[in-house]
Length: 95
Image 1 (tube, rainbow, N blue to C red):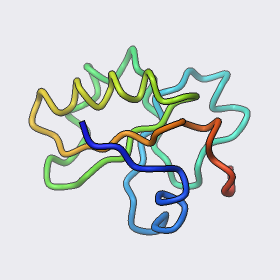
Image 2: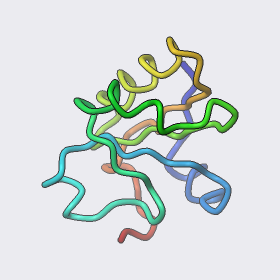
Image 3: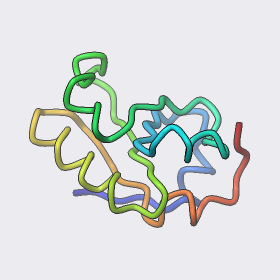
Image 4: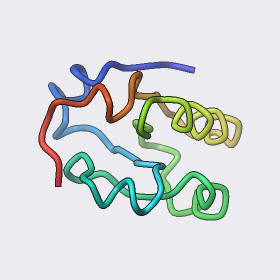
């Protein structure tokens, strides 16, 4: 599984397709602007909404759940990277 740092995501934010897999209450505290919210528990049922031609950056609170999400999507042929450190490492804007 490929990883990317929060700083690298911040530098290239406009070109990233970000999926936040945290729970609703966590996302309510703020998410990366433009990120798609799909809780980890629903990802398996909503992956058909994603485009296999795009690379997705997976995000959670600390990097663990997004790592599991990345592995799930990879196993189904999606291109993904995991944001190491999750939102705990993010110092960019939130919405």
